[in-house]
Length: 432
Length: 179
Picture 1 (cartoon, rainbow over the protein chains, first blue to last red):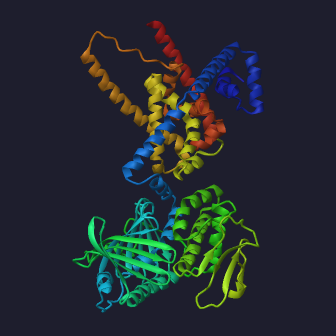
Picture 2: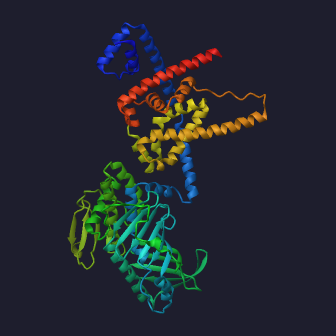
Picture 3: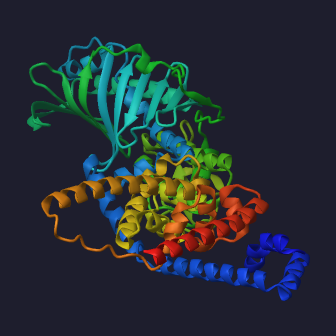
């Protein structure tokens, strides 16, 4: 080996990334060449300088300064968004993951039936309560805000309803648009940030429930046309309003309306164990067809999925209980279930799925599985013939009953245990 | 701390701001060396490093390839440096107007400014390899992975970077002695 060849290899020699034979060859040359030895010393000196400087800089205290600033600026940004607490940010972050978006969208879909029941056939009845309801039932288009659960903390869904079509956006999820067509049982999800579109099948239970909601409201009005209750006048959202309340065996509807125009200002619904608030109504506003088009907008990429949220059954529900206990809560069933609770669990579900390190399609199946099971439960939720007793029960406990319900038209109850096996039980044999 | 950059980027985006610490620890020295060389002043390097990291955190959603976090971060830092230099220039102009005689306070140089300046002058590919090797404590294999280049290219680049650095440091030394 001559000096020129050796010099090429000296950095590798000092750094130790030469193979054995070249390592030996360089060492041999160095023994007999003081010039190259001098080069090695120089390289070692430079290396030492680099390493020392690197260590010195690594010891700088940037970390606390940076982390404090991040936390501080995040808070300021949150305040600027006008949302309470940290919730808006959590939603915003969640919305960055496509899988979770779909899962959340699915959970939100739970409310689909509720948002729709305004559009039905004109009633023709001329009772006072129905008069107030009349513009809702007859309007060609309705724009409104809908909140499930707590008005202070629940995300607000802004809905534009035109016949069987609706367009829904949700506060703090500014990048997601849901366009729902109840005629074909299809939903188009648009992600405006990534410009992607997804179709989700919602045929079956959602459509049926929509019909049943319309039916529910009609029955309600018929039932209360003689015995609705007047709540008198009150100020609602800064407006003078006259109130009515109609009660069914398992539901309650409060309507606050403008005493002069009879147009509703605010409606509060209790359907079984779901609370819904509807407000900020606009009737018969002109709405551009493109807003409720089921076509993929130009510039958007359509993503293929096999998500089907229609016809959720008991098996789907059991799967969602399993996901809730196993994935979300590390082996214990939740204190309470239901739409509002399920929606609140989504951030945690996302986090846990993220930690599982599983392929994207498995992850999205988990998210969708959770949503689908909860759709099944929502049907029960509005009927009230169910009881959840799983709070704190360990997944796998075959002795503890976690859920019981009476299916439509059935004498017997279905009883689900902590190990998720199901028994068909006659009413007289129900476990205490 | 052994997880990939992609992992931590994902964690941050999923709502775990605290995991940004790991990325910060991994690249703090790299960033400081990069900036100190360009700015020639320790305090300014720390200030711009902090600004760059905070910006990187809030812009993370726009990072298309999480695996290239390192190069992306240097890009942000370069931008911050430009802004800083523009501000500095204006400040100096004002100072000159205010008082001719008053001497500006001497900037506090970092521990081995000559070296950092020489690194800052390296062509980009060489600079990245040197920064990752000695300030990011990456092995040659890890550098190959991070910069998506064959291992042979990394070792050649490193050797060449040494040669350029030595020449440039010798040059600096000579100039200093001539003054």
